[in-house]
Amino acid sequence: MKSRMLFRSIGRKLAPALFLAFILISVGFGSINAQNYLCGDVNNDGKININDMSYLIKYLYKNGSPPQPATLAGDVDNNGQINITDISFLIKSLYRGGARPCADGMIVLEIGQSKIFGPAGEVIGFDSILSDNRCPTGVYCFWEGEAMTQLHLWTSEMGTISFTAKISGLTGPEYDWGHFPVEVGNYTITILDLNPYPDYSHPEIRSNRVYLKIE
Image 1: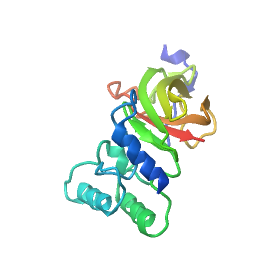
Image 2: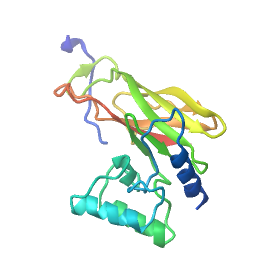
Image 3: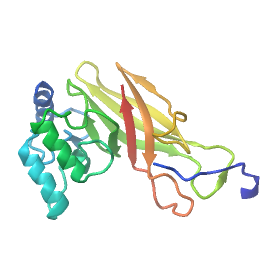
Image 4: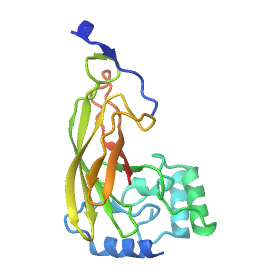
């Protein structure tokens, strides 16, 4: 069967708003997932300040508790990792006029997480992976395949809108193909990546993290 497959999968290169966000976190979002988080508010007190820097330092270097209510709240430079560069980003944001946490770049979510991203407290959430038949690494395939996800968007004007979005196999943020923008309300939402990528040698590893661009 493998001898009839055509393509070999290739290795993958891999102020006011804060106040409103605090209000939204305090009162809840109705049907929105309970794991909403404000990027940079790693101690989950509804504010971003020096206490968050201290919390993040303890987490990284003193075996402290992870960021709450979601670990990704500590990924303030939005690069998919939590490390010393996030502490540096917070310092610049708070005291040197730098960009606010997660202002630019990709939005990273794990299944079941939601994230405040907009100036009016808009929320994007990652509910589930409906299907994933992307061509795994380590085999030959006729077709690169694709994965379909279930997401939701919340705005104060429209409430919660559930929608699906997909991504092709053998693509990623560095490629300009295999991405399918979806118009939702006033936003265009695109999946840039979905990880971990399927691996023929490790079928037990399932994707659970999506990388989004919202315009």
